[in-house]
Image 1 (cartoon, rainbow, N blue to C red):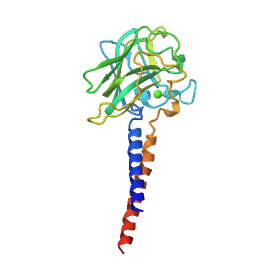
Image 2: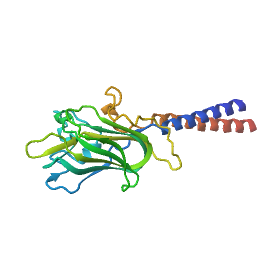
Image 3: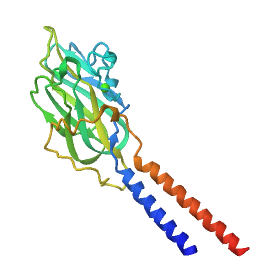
Image 4: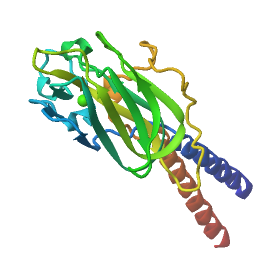
Length: 254
Ligand SMILES: [Ca+2]
């Protein structure tokens, strides 16, 4: 009996360790709900946000249809009387994360023709030193799918979009650029763990396969790792079995 209980305990413990490890590498959108700041350098007559658009709508998990009931959360929108700008929006991830993918979603408004034409996507772990992981020049036209940027898993705390050329959308007075959402996929950084074993992105692919890389809007909100729940059950099972063993021992002594 004792040997059997020990065997079951060992198996349960190994199972718990395995699934706990599996849950740790599941990537989520770590930008969801995080603070976004905007800045314009060296240009006058420019607004980094317009009307009922807001910087915080870049990380609210929504890419609303247009027209829709969520027209007041279409995303971020900026305008200037010149098309060449020096404009940044920066997401503070509020912690260290090992990230490997960034998605820029166009707005459904204007069928995405207001997507910025030239920009860089940059990452940083200190908010001062930046590494470019994506770059586009002279994009134009309607856009419905997100732009995807994959890179080797890197510990970061900030993501910056640096726009240098607004879209060709103009109303006679100004040019504009907007996005519906920015998603950053990764896992919480664990000191001493440099390889989280995440998926291997293709750094050379800037535009995702429409059928596979656009996440379901319903999944933009971070979900708890599915392995965590199973791990909890397994750990509970280990405790119950251990208690059973102790009780059995006590009864045997009597
Ligand atoms: Ca949004």
